[in-house]
Length: 151
Image (cartoon, rainbow, N blue to C red; front, top):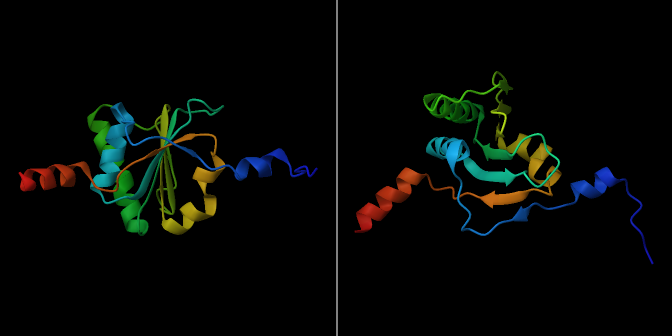
């Protein structure tokens, strides 16, 4: 009988995030952050629900921008949208380099990456115990406009 003698940290890195059904809906400030990112054409938007893990926050919002300029545009849009709702980040890191912008809103954290940086750090794999909430890449406005055009 074989046993896995790798350290617990290595085993944890092998875990894949659990996926949720498409019926799960985001609400509140997390949903506003997701919509703001989508409005700036963020790629691969994913929300990790960390409430059932020993984490320091409830949600991670992960997304990518095609380049550093788009990463900054996404981060700016998220901050402006939430500021309009009187929600401000407690801390922002990485804005100047724009490879990975982290915005800490206490109950959730927004991570905006370049594709290379996202692949390198692989937070989805690192937080493998989290429930993964898939978010459509289609911005809400585009969906509404398309539906209206079809009527």
